[in-house]
Image (tube, rainbow, N blue to C red; front, side, top):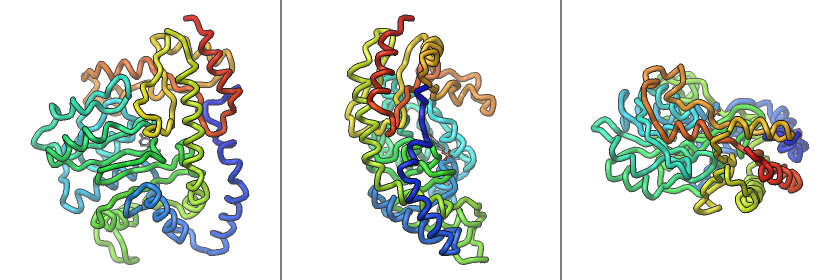
Length: 361
Ligand SMILES: *Cc1c(COP(=O)(O)O)cnc(C)c1O
């Protein structure tokens, strides 16, 4: 069986280094917000070209706390509207809602799966104060166009980078990351980080993640307990230096899929520049998606669907169930994610390609 993502194998090369880190943290006797978290925040901010890194509990909290931080600092008010792509993973939407803000859905581009910048302006009202950009599947959204419309309307631009570790970023106000084990930079549990150049936001986030307190037992705002775990930070410090080479392996596989999959029933993703994609997922489309998925499983190839139900059709978001987003709905009906990872062998890639090319629906 070719598994969709072999997380055990991805982490195997780091096992000895992880064990040394575990011993070092145990020897230090310091388990919350210690040197490993501090180092990772600095390392990761440097790596991504941001000034400040604030480690938090997970990716959802990175988004929620970023927006709450802007409210705390007076940049946003409860009830303000935030533009977000209609086809994103539900966590992007939840982060906006948990901060007391109002998500406004915008359709993606059917070729790139990222928000269509030319549709943003029509959704901007007097209450619109921000855009949450999502680099879905690992492909950089059209930031030049988004920044242009954002700056024109004085919007905060926040990026959901949970699928985009290793991209070259530009021009936003804050970047939110998840280190969920299946991400391109994955911990051995939950983890997240916010990156920003805004010193005031960084200071507020350091309080919000820690009961509203910078100085122990002195609470300046209504905070949370959402800290990047010291051990997870230690493991991430081991893995970060290898992120670029792991992403390069993903790109090699993606290049082969793009040039060697030849089946008229299948639509391949449109990639404008390979360096602007880290291939968290390799997503194809076909009108007979469920049939293709069954065929592949019969041939020992595991695939997944990202995602089967769009946010506006989720039971949890009942107020939106009457809305229609035709492009988003096509995407959710037709997408299928093929196996891709830094540990997939070239024989496995060849087998996936040959099996897909032999599929007759
Ligand atoms: C994984 C993911 C998140 C949430 O991250 P968690 O660490 O699981 O909370 C948010 N947005 C996107 C696009 C994701 O893929």
